[in-house]
Structure formats: structure tokens, C-alpha cells
Amino acid sequence: MFHHPSFDAHERVLFASDETAGFRAIIAVHNTVRGPALGGCRVWTYADDDAALTDALRLSRGMSYKSAMADLPLGGGKSVMIVKERGAATPAMFEALGRAIADLNGRYIVAEDVGSSPKDLLNVRRHTAHVTGLDPEDGGRGDPSPTTSRGVFIGVEATAKAVGFSSLEGVHVAVQGLGNVGYGLARHLRDAGARLTVADISSERVAMAERELGAKAAPVEAIGEVEADIFSPNALGAGLNAMTIPRLKVRAVAGGANNQLATPADDEALRERGILYAPDYVLNAGGVIKMAGEYYRWDDAEVDRRVDGIADRLSEIFTEAARTSRPTGEVADRLAEARFARH
Ligand code: NAD
Image 1 (cartoon, rainbow, N blue to C red):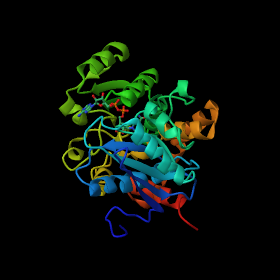
Image 2 (cartoon, rainbow, N blue to C red):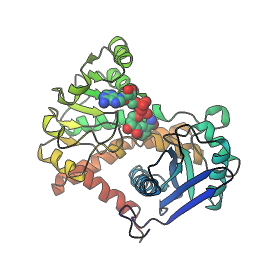
Image 3 (cartoon, rainbow, N blue to C red):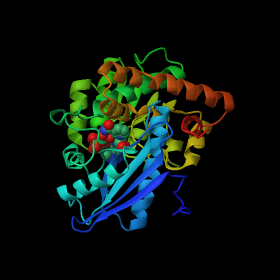
Image 4 (cartoon, rainbow, N blue to C red):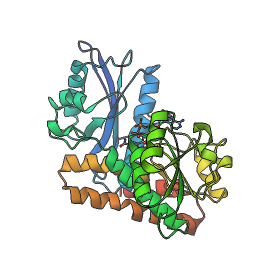
């Protein structure tokens, strides 16, 4: 365990099972210097136990960075539940997860993630109060996506200003992915006067953006080559890589998709091309800010204020990157690490 390639001084890793319920899960608590470790429960058909452990270790570490750069009183954690097939997770399994989380005495707070839903969390909540991201009818605040979209919008605006625009009026943004986050972002951009070119594998989403937002459509395979001011990835991860970076015709990349850089070398590749990269986890922190607000019972104004802070945090990163001639992703990581370091 301590020599695992993805192990990074995680504080606790709990392997939990309940044979009667057919439950197996790993809860990884990466760092709680800033506060309890918040992170969703991923339910997945892992090829083997090591793949599940790798996911738990990596994703929990990522949450430490995201929460620290959002200035939240939270650390990083994640749980993964191992299932034999998709959709096979039962209420009894989520109850077993709840008992395991209860044993951590508030060190870990669970939310939904790929494969789990807010309703599944109700079964977790039977055994522990350390749950967030519930539906409004269950006492929660509902879907975090609109808050994520607003945070990404604030990040795109701050990035546009960093490359010389005074506002988003007339700025051309190429938006990849029009899902929960991307469509909400596109709407904010349109309201701010930006010019939109969009792509999605769903032709319905594209047609809706053309009709409602006056967007221009681009083929899915060409959105990363559109001549625009800003490229905004809001679909899947690892979209910025050795193949795609040389083809970009923009001044900056700013979007909400998680894990946009395929490798750390791609951070430097963007810098070398003179393309300003807004680190993904700084931009897309609106969701975790909203989850934190539900857990700590902040009012809407407090949540909004913290989402607005994304602009200042990006400016800090851009300024430091310019001062040190280092890539922005690396600079963000160093700033985050300083925020959750043990003194
Ligand atoms: P979603 O599933 O609602 O949207 C994804 C969209 O991308 C879909 O419309 C899909 O058709 C489209 N898509 C898939 N492959 C594509 C491709 N090759 N080219 C163009 N479009 C493609 O998901 P979401 O909730 O909007 O999340 C989008 C990204 O933002 C993900 O990376 C997610 O991890 C990240 N994120 C989401 C939140 C949130 O609050 N929802 C928070 C933080 C990060």
C-alpha cells in the first residue's frame, strides 16, 4: 500500500466489506488539514481491486487540490464501490457504505459521483449525517451543475481579461460539450455578449444552442481547431494532449471538464505555444462549493461570494505563472499544496 504508485501520504484508506450485502468499497481520505475530506462515491465495474484502489487514491488527492484552491474548509476524499455490473448497486450496499462512513466520525463526507445518485445517498444517511448533495425534497440543495456553470463562466471571463479583453462582449468562445455544465456556461456567455461556436455528440443539444443561443455549430472532431479567442472544454477529460494542443487556434483554454490535461507535459506544451491555460479544477469548483454550502448551511449569498472568488484565484495563478515563467497547472498545484500543507 505505502509503495503504491498513486499513494501520496493519504491519511487513511479504509477497505470495507459486508458479505451479506455483497458490498465492497474503498474510502480514501487524502488530507484533512483544512477540514473534513469531501468527495463523491463512485460506483464502478473495476477490472480488479488495484484499479479501484488507484481510482480512490487519485480522485481523493484531486479533491484536496480542488477544495484547497476554492479556499473551502474541506479536505480531499473519495469512495469507490466495486460492483459486478452497471446498475448493480443495491440499497443494502449504500447502507453498508453509510456504516463504514460513520466509523470515520466525520473525517469523510460523501456526495454523489459517477454511478451513484442523490437518492442512493438517502440509504447512506440512515447511518451517518456526513452526506451532502441531496435533492431539495430530501433536505438538500439539489443539482450542483448550475453553480458549476456559473463558476466556469466567471473563470472564462477572468481568463479573457488576462489575455487582454476588457469584457466578454464580442469574444469568440468555442464550447466543446453542451451537457449540464457546458450548456449553462454557453447561456451565461451569450448573455455576456460572447460569440459562440459549439459542438456536442448530441445533435439535439447543438440544435438547441443554435436556436436558443444563436450559436454556430462545428463538427465534434473540429471544435478543437476552430479559430477563436477561447477554447472551452466541457465534455470529457484528457482532451488536451500531444495530438490536440498543436492544432489549437486560440489564445486561451478555459472550461469545466475534469482532468483536461492528458499528462503534466501538456501543461508546459500549452505555455510554450503561448496559450493561457486556466486550470480545470479551479474553474469547475462551483459544484464542490455548493456541496460545502449544503453541508455547512451557508446561505446563497455566501455560496455566490465564494464562487465569485474563482476570478481572484485565477488571477493569482496567472500572475504567479507570469512571474516565474512556469505553466499555470503546475503553479495552481503548488499554491494548492501550500494551502493544505502540515506546518
Ligand atoms: P454531462 O454528461 O451533462 O455533459 C457532457 C456533454 O458532453 C454531453 O452533452 C455529451 O453529449 C457531450 N460530449 C461527450 N463527448 C463529446 C465529444 N467528444 N465532443 C463534444 N461533446 C461531447 O456532464 P456535465 O455534468 O456537464 O460535466 C461535464 C464535465 O464537467 C465533466 O468532465 C465533469 O466531470 C465536469 N464537472 C462537472 C461538474 C458538475 O457540477 N456537473 C462539476 C465539476 C466538474
